[in-house]
Length: 316
Image (tube, rainbow, N blue to C red; front, side, top):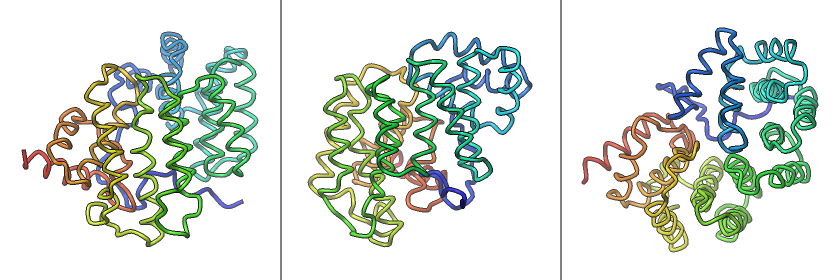
């Protein structure tokens, strides 16, 4: 089996800036540093404090799992505590990351995710790991089954919905622009199903950006998102306005992945030409840009982010 493609949202060009997937989670940064030194007890304490805040748990475990040394330390943790669901989950997602880097065996990662899921039946995080794997490798029915298992445990799981949007955006990539593409229906449905204070309200913006990534990658849209006109249509403008208006009213500033959404929304507003609104978002993002969507379709993400931010802030 050939290695999976690079994870969505990552430019093929080497980034000139190191993005930190931990975002502004200082507790996570500290636990990650401790784990790199073999002190897995710090990670255990972190996950105990996280409890059943499933979006935060998913964010923390995926960031920890991406570190090259995590697999070895998670195995040490499991040797010391064979029944630890947290250790099993961390190992499972580390094995998923290994596969996504083209180095591991998918069946081994799948088995590890299911083992972790059996140890923690209520936790969606092992299923998140499986969805990350199948998003790259799985058939459509397998992806849907895993997503359903995840939603059963946490209906508005943020990361899971982003993975599904990215996957769905790639359907029928050869047909070119299609305002009725299924990714838009999925994003609208998920936003409507979510609670009023859920950041899934911004999912239609994510779908619009992911579809641009696919269309531009296939030569159906220009490689410069601002020049593409993808954000200029009436439907696009309405999506952006609704999402921005929602953000202005949103009071839950502690969501662990809110900076992902803010980057997508700032990108959309900048591409739409609404520089004052983009500037407000850039102020809130601060020093926490994310590779996606600034890398879309194949750009050096930090340079693209800096250029957009400087332009927006210089215009207001």
